[in-house]
Image 1 (cartoon, rainbow, N blue to C red):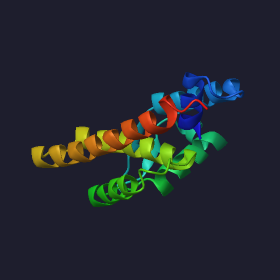
Image 2 (tube, helix red, strand yellow; image 1 turned 30 degrees about the vertical axis):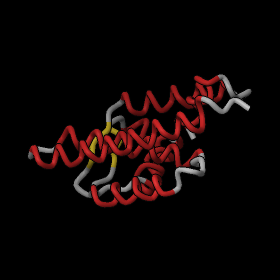
Image 3 (cartoon, rainbow, N blue to C red; image 1 turned 90 degrees about the vertical axis):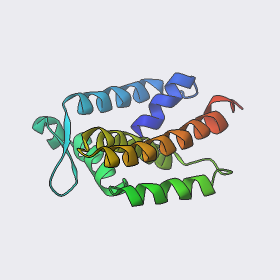
Image 4 (cartoon, rainbow, N blue to C red; image 1 turned 135 degrees about the vertical axis):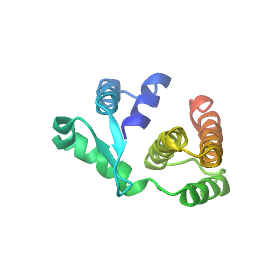
Amino acid sequence: MWIFSSLEVAAGTTPASQTAVSDANLMFELLLGGVEIDQDNNIVLLDKEMASMRQGRAFLSQINDNIPRSRSSMEQMVKTLEDQRRKPLTPVQFENLILSLVYSAHQAWHQEERREQEAWGGVLLQLANVTVHELRGNYLFNYT
């Protein structure tokens, strides 16, 4: 819920903004410590102390358990999200979308073959389009 909370703070829509800011700061601190993808295709926090904290373990669990790792799985997720565009995403779905976007950017950046970079870049673009649609349709203009 860290990402969703930070968006609420930016939009000024939550009374619990102090908690949301703390959550956003924690996520930033976790990522600032560095991440890498291990041989089993799992995200690993490089800061072992942060990884051992309850919040670090929860973050790793969310990203490793809920984010598709293959390009075809990402493409399927995009298709599913596009098919349900009339219905707003839940906060958990939105967080998973954003984490998938970050994962895809990482994959695109770290591919050695140009063809693979472009393929992951295409997935990244599709995820960005879904994210913008979600923000425009459900967060930026619906203040009621």
